[in-house]
Length: 375
Image (cartoon, rainbow, N blue to C red; front, side, top):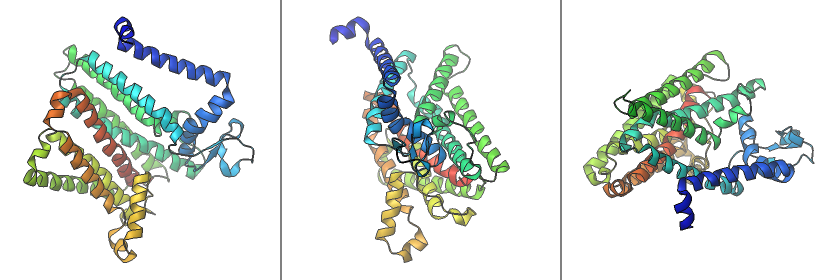
């Protein structure tokens, strides 16, 4: 193995591995379409995406017609549902690991040194990812209202989890490479400025699209008071949490510094958006409260309703523990990222920081904008 690494280098071996896997899976799907494509790729990977795009809980292959399970004959073939399975995880996790290895090689090639600047430059992309997911939620609302997808398949598939993560990643990667090129050629004074600008521009375009749908279509609406409440609530919660940290345990933020504020705010957005959307959306003019889109949210809401009496939940709602969970998790993360981690492995530490913020801000932005646009 060492001889192989010395002879070809880790980057070439990684590229060859990816190429062999892609070629092998493609060849197997062409040679054995039923066994490989229908029974494996479609059932566990593409079928759930198609079901999610239509807002269906179940979809069946039906000879390639891909129809709702209720409308399919008994011998329609395999079925699929939105979400993940052990089989899909078995494919996505190795893919993610290969992707992370490739990112590491790319960062080495780019020879980035100012990782903290890159963290701030990538911040709008985390908002953009959540907003882009709401475009697909609007697509589902359009299908329910009109029977037609505003954005058709397969293109809308890249806006659905987990494919949307790859979509946003490659867009951010292209923006990063472009920004570094501008910096190295002295067009800008730092790569973080065009990177932040590109992300902000993409976010603005996405929000403009959602606003256009809300202004012109009956299946989407606009509730600015709800948006303002979530932003203010998350910001106030973050300030209180950060002041408490500085007062009682200032060493917690010695490593992350201001990045810690962003971590807490990102998860506060997710928490407050869930509380507002799941329990109080009707107060802001929506016809009904939203329903949880993630298993953790759903479990917390369910167990809160079981543990607390109705006389309490009718006043407090059932989603508020999710906000506490998100805040505690964010503070724990800030605590773990001390000075030593950033000094020993800065590249790895900043990648993890970006992932931590994205995990909170991506779903949080989606939940906030789902409630804001009533989809």
